[in-house]
Image 1: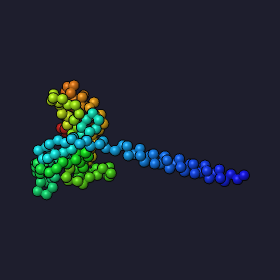
Image 2: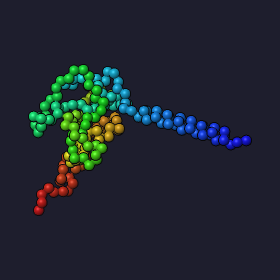
Image 3: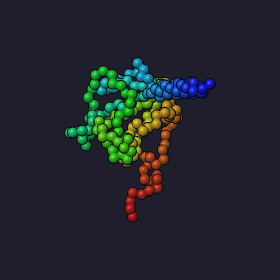
Length: 185
């Protein structure tokens, strides 16, 4: 008897198993997509309606325009309000980073239409007013963008804010808190 039919059968079985794993892997990659947009998750702003994203225990509104792009006559001037829009604008992705001399070429952006912000709110906020946390990316005008903020902690971060005053030593106190002096002697 020849061993050839046995080799062909094993080869076909291996190819079938590899194809199955490949197809299964393709499906798994799709499972890590952006959270689904929920109908009725619309918010009215002065400039128009936006639709956010239901992300478990929080609602996210990303890439919300807060001013007109600072181009042409608006460059180096105070920001002007955005023009009112019609319809519902999806607020599902963070806006682009403003132009920077970023050392990471993959994150380099030349987009001047970059005056956007991301907002995360607890799904069950209740009637009680809550504190607001503002996150400003660092990077010294070389790196940093709103999308760098890790929003994965969800309502745990938002609940922590409700416990009292959040203090980050050195952030607002500047050079004194870091025991540095801006004066040269």
